[in-house]
Amino acid sequence: MMEIMMKRSLAILASIGVSVAPAAADIPVIDKTNYAVARDTAEKTGKILDTNKEILTTVEETLKAVTGDRGSDAGPLRDIAIGNGFSVSSMPSFDSILKSGIVDFGSLDPKVVEMATLFINGLQLVRSLSGKENSSLASDKSYEELMKTVMGVSALITGSQQAVETRRSALESAGGEIGKAEDIKGSIDQNTQLQVQTGLTLNEMIGVLNAGVQSLHAENQRKLTDMSNTKKALRYE
Image 1: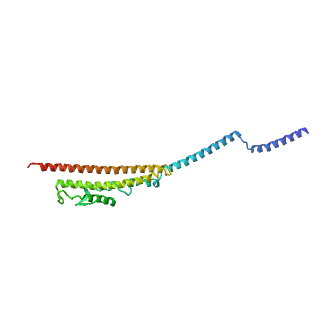
Image 2: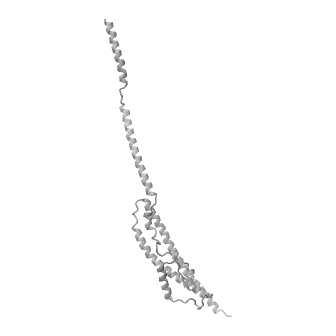
Image 3: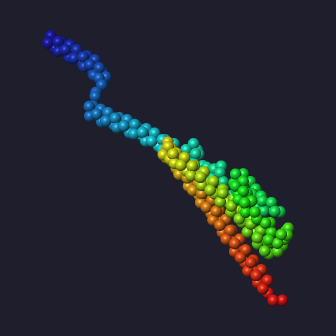
């Protein structure tokens, strides 16, 4: 009897063990250490991604700030050197000012021409020293060259005075634009335009100085002609 009960008990235990074992295999096991490491890695990865987004945004903003057209910023500075006023480059050559006894200033500003003409007419100059038309005498040629120079320099002085006033007003207006650019590209373009305008202003100065040299040349030419004529007059024949 005892043997039979022992066998039944073993059979029951065996059946319980078989039924319990598969159930135990489905229970999830949490490794706290690995979980903590995985969570920390995920957090750090998220921070790295956020940082990369910030860097990308900064790069895009920087690229935008140093590229593209900023004509609206530099445009107001474009005409401060010459603009619509007088420019030495608009002056005709002194040799072409007088044609067949008629003064011709070409496409020069009408206001400049008017003032220069009033000055020249006020001198009441004769057309030639000998009184002859189209004279080939050295004294008449020298006088004509000197007269052209006086006319040209007169127009140049009048125009330059006008340009100085216009330029001053333009420079004062340009000063109000400094610092208004929205980004570094606008500031760079403004500075570049100012450099260009400075170069144009220097070119105007060179033109004025060149006219001064021409004036001295005409004066020296007249003196040389006078010396030559005096020598001819004193020559014994």
